[in-house]
Structures are given as C-alpha cells and as structure tokens.
Length: 206
Image (tube, rainbow, N blue to C red; front, side):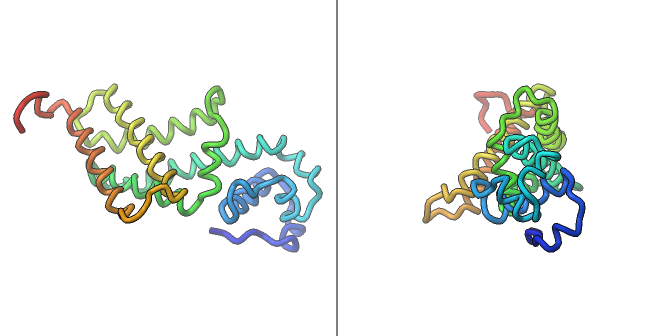
C-alpha cells in the first residue's frame, strides 16, 4: 500500500481528479473508509476544500469513484489469478485473490458496498466485468450458458460474503478461517460439478 503523500509533495504536483481519487483511496485503505472526508483529502493534498470541487462533485461522487476503482482492481486481480488455471483450481485461485484484494485495499473495497450501482451504467459495467471473469473461470465446466451465469453470481456472492465477514472479524474462534474457506471452495465446486451436463442424474447412486 502506497504511503499517503505529504503536503510538501502535494504542492509540487498539479491537482486533478486522478490525484484526488488516489489520495482518497490511500486514506480509506490506511485509516478506514469511515475516516475519509473531503476535509481530510484537502489537508493531505495541501489545498483548501473548495479546490476539490473542480475535480469531484462532492463526497458522494468521490465515494462513487472509489467504488468504481475497487471493482476495476478486483476484476483485474481475479483475471490475473486465473491465468493458466481451469476448473476447481481456477475457482480456488480467484477466491483467494478476492480475499487478498479485501486485505490489501480494505477502504476502496468497502466503498463498493457504500455506493449503489443500480441505474449507474458505468458501475453496472464494472460489476459485469467481475462477473465476466468469473464466467470465464467457469468455462472449465460443462455448463449451459444460463447455469454459468447463475454460478458466476453465486461465486461472487460467496466470496464477497466470506471476505466481508472476515474483514470484520466475523468468523469466531476456534475455527481457522483458512480451513473454512477451503471448505467453502469445495462446496462451491461440488455444486458447480452438480450443475454440469455430464453430472450424475439426480437420485442416482454415486
């Protein structure tokens, strides 16, 4: 995680939307999304808060930009994790990459839950890119197109839910989260195999 830039560094570089969003992301990741304010961003950049409004429309617009960035980074990390893998190995890899994203970039990942994407074409497209990567991962299974869509949405829900609980210490001891996650992946893969057109028919003895 990059260090939050100092005021001395800030005044030597021109202010633009990219810098505002990047500094906001650094603050959110380092200190938590709840600590992010426009005043905090302005102070870090060494400018007065009104100067930010030439680049963002306000706090909600800044939050939207962070949520978009979070989804874009997530999609790229999942795609990178799946390179050269297929089937159950690919599912496990993207699952672990999802968890690592939340650990590495907790602030901008949290932003993806704070700003609604419904009705926002750019954010909806970012969500579709995440689902698209998961859909490609699932091409190692013999699924219908419809089942692949549902399976991708299920993976997204499961990985997001697990990571959200994990980031908030929602998995109580004495159970090891790593073991629990391995079981989650096994259950997901078993379900995907069950959906396969080559699966043993329901009711048959396996």
